[in-house]
Length: 415
Image 1: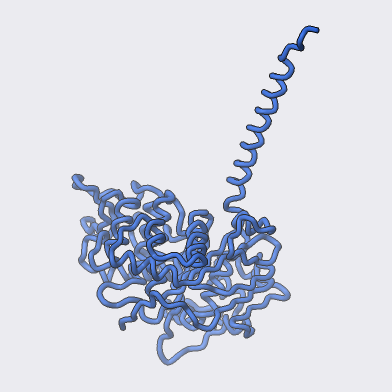
Image 2 (image 1 turned 60 degrees about the vertical axis):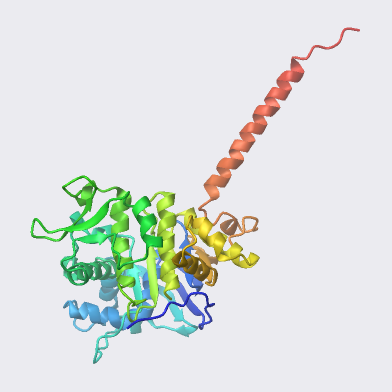
């Protein structure tokens, strides 16, 4: 069913608030989601657990249905909490639950026991959250897609389900089509051209079936044989499964969104990418938002926060879409204007995760804030700031030494 993009209109839906307390490394996380929500912080601070918990809260029935459809059961009924937590979050993750663990959605308590319990439904429940995991490269070993059952108990559910979705996309929606990128029916040229320039260098992404297995290759113009998966750059290996996930979310033709899906979670989309490629990826994020998806990103890249900061400044200053286009180097085409205009109508939130501390809202990204977490953008620009300060200190010291040397070498006048 077609859905019309919601570009140009402020989002006035009821606020989506998630509260997670004493769950794994998360001490206390109060989060209100914007149209784009970015989470930052060091490793092992609970970002992935929070994002997986969001999906579990919103997609409990779909998750249990998917496990059951693939004949995965948890001690005869799905009520064994430790077994389910290990199957969903990953093996060994049953220890996430502690005394005092609590989850609330939109102000209402969500019992962990209710999330674990499987209740069979008369029809398949719809999925609301599409999750593109950090381990996405594992979904294409050797350039071959994997279905759900290729993985084992203890492999995170979000990886298994993402991999299965990509597998079905390649097997069914693309079928006998050899060329995956560029695809005229997938994404417009405002998005395709930067991908070609900054991700594939003018090469094509294709499906090779010569060895009786659908294998992804990159075809460089003038070369007969396609480059196998392990010959790709690290960024291309990371980006390709993400691109296929975007294809799933943005069907061909007049359909704007995948039926039922409302949220997109992308973990560390910047992995392996040059800043120019990250900016290209952010155009895809803005396109998802233009189509009406609510997007949540975890990142270690300051480029992502550069964009959020700039867009929030444009909003506060009443800027028009032309500055958004200039930010991304886009020409004044109808598609580019629509994308930029939509970006200015969206809401943006940023949260900082730190070990053994409550999650902090740093959405203003104010470099002059008293809080170091906000001023240094969750630590993403802290080292660069200190490097600049130390270089300035070195310059000042050198000048002071030169000044002292000049004074000591100056001869006193003879009386």
